[in-house]
Image 1: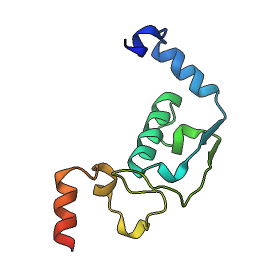
Image 2 (image 1 turned 135 degrees about the vertical axis):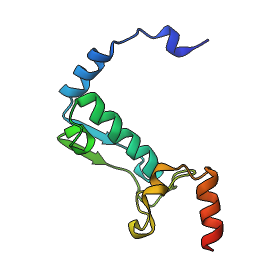
Image 3 (image 1 turned 180 degrees about the vertical axis):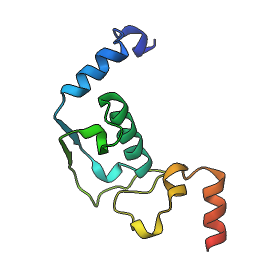
Length: 108
């Protein structure tokens, strides 16, 4: 049984209209949110809302909530990671990517 097959399909234009009407995005359990996932959310909202030059597609209010010091994300850098240690390559590559693992091995 495929749950998506049972759900009614929504056109891309209708989906975009729904997200353009939204005024608030609430992200709970933020400690488990990885930088890669946050980047993907940002890119998706830019596409859906049609504002490529604005963070989160110009969403007026973005609220991050939860215990910031609870469990960290799996296989990603967390939001509280020291930003000086993160390069653009870290954000684009998943930690299970061979390049990142090789770089970590050569750094130590």
